[in-house]
Length: 344
Image 1 (spheres, rainbow, N blue to C red):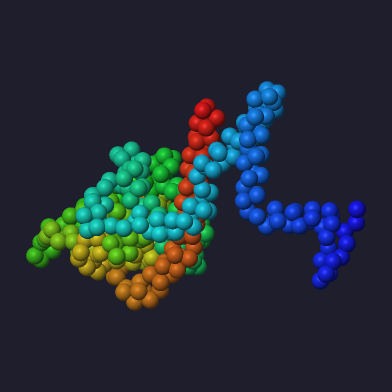
Image 2: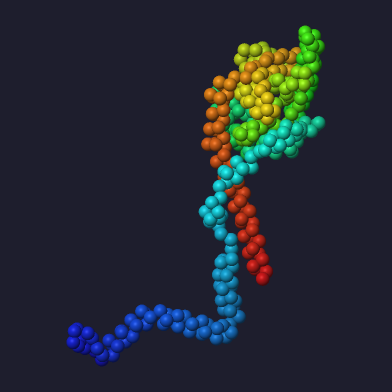
């Protein structure tokens, strides 16, 4: 039957009544809840009658939903919730106390066979070291590039056992003893004579700038007082080029290394070292050049470039590595939870 229009334009009749009932149900929240309860009761009654295959599918769907709700948040969610900063984690790992600085000075650089000592490697981790200063600064003629230094710091090739057989590593101690003998002879002939010694150290770190490090070949002491630094260089043959490097055309790698070494050793020892003896040794002959500390060169050029390199180039890469390691760890935990859930 058709609905008819009554007063005010309202429709009445069977169709109009059905339309109004549907509107009332849609607007009534209790009706929705009631419908859901009826569905759940019907499902509970129906589930035992399902075939075994259908029942397994239904149970798997329910189990998957509950397992998903128990899974840990994704790494990105963890980062957001905890405001975790991987770069800060790297820098926090470098923080030192005065006791740490003193302890680093005492670590062994190498074993007697020339292999790098684990404590020495750990002290250098995530720190740009003096032998790489020129390359990190991007100076012309340096043996590497800033990107090459980043890669080397990430991989730490100095820990490779094959380095123990390198010429420089093999003859470093021989060269140091040759320097000590020459200087002791001169000290005994001086007026007045004085006691001379070279103190071997591990890693020199600056407590206020812990992202820098240096491993000098020795601290020069006169009458027991530290006064200078020793940096040993070795070569297979004494050539005109080697003599030129030592006398008039010292490469930037050496310059930055000795300037940085003096600054870091001074900070670690708590005393000012104002010079460094660069001792070039070959099986045929040797030579020595004393280099004074250049505060203007260090403060005005080398140090600012190193800071820029570390915080703009290396630290972001190191943070990415920490972030990736954390994601792998989160993935491992998630897989273990999934395996436990399946066993249940």
